[in-house]
Picture (spheres, rainbow over the protein chains, first blue to last red):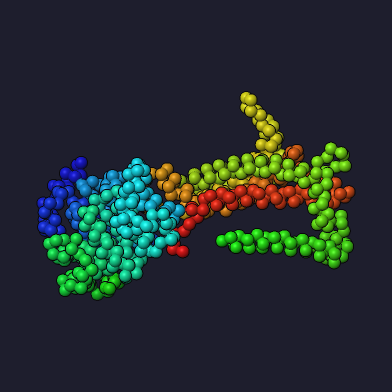
Length: 300
Length: 291
């Protein structure tokens, strides 16, 4: 409780962030994610590695935020800190006003990684049911929820298949359904489409936009593809490596006021889309000092 | 699928036939005194005493054990003895399973336990079985707790378990450690504790490693039981008649082969039972990768 109050107290100093105005209408007053002055230092054999350096970020409830940057900029690390898979060296993180550990125990977030990470001995339906099963959901309600989720990701016909019988894209959709199983208010995704081919990837992006709009969940999305970040996000957080810092936060003004529900494939052809892609690219390369080229980035 | 099963059986049969042909071929063509190189006999004598004809061995199985009128046929005596040994080996296998999986669980949970225990587990297998079988028997004979009295067959089962637990412990440990980091992190993200992670993730993931270990354990338990029967002098099992009939081989060479065939069938039955287990657990042997 004390942490929730602390979060609220510091809020007024944060009004400069672009996401705030965009989300004020009808948004709950507790941010989905609040990151303040976070450092993360890894001890390696070659000495200390500063993965994150004085990172501040606020993700409003229902907001879609992408973290983009070259390899080693700490974008995955930041997501892992939010998920309580790792602990910050300094600074504070609050997820819906709670500590990350508390938020994890309360199942405030759903998570998806680059690999689907399905359990091979479980059917598609049983994989999606896993988190529900672990948290003691009654079997009747579980079955109903799984049907609903598989319907949402368009895999209702594959409920009884095993993961090895599915394509990579289908496996990833199962993983997303699993992440959504408990209706989390926050989705954490670490390059979930990174291993997919371009066609599948675009299809999955469109689906994710639809699903995020349907569920109203906030999303923290790690990617190294500029068009992906632009297409999906309300705001794009551009990061730079060594040490990992937030270089810029760019609000996306796509799809008009109607918001995410209006984002369709047609968007990719629009002029505004290319302008945003250019804006993100310039932010990525703009501040680059000699010798710190933005390696590992996809501009496709 | 059916055609593949049929061809597997056919190949198996062909293998047996090949051994039979080699046996009879060498017996027919080889020198009577065997092949001796530098004073050492590298190939056996081909006399009926050393190498009875296969058909003699087979027909001997159908004949009575002794010349007495009430004697049972040899195959029945061998089969009953094999069943007794199978029961003892199974008991040893179960003990080995419990101990092996138990040790693996402890070693998986605490790194320190792995460092401390694993070398001893490996070392335990270097102690020759024959050396401690009589010791186990004499210790066992002193055990008497209330109505419970240590039976001689329990010593044999214990020795069988001593051989069986080793592959099971090593296989189970590898299996329990096999889940990918992503799966472990997922369970962590679901706030699943140790026991739930064990039940939902580690044990199912261990199945593909555990099954071959269990099969090896079953084969080891049979060998352990037979050897322990011989060295503790337990009556009724196949180890005992193996020795007994071998002693009569000078007068009845084909008879000694009865228990040997019995032991082979016994080993196959033990390994086969684990294969059945594998069929029941086949869904746990899937891979995540697209086929």
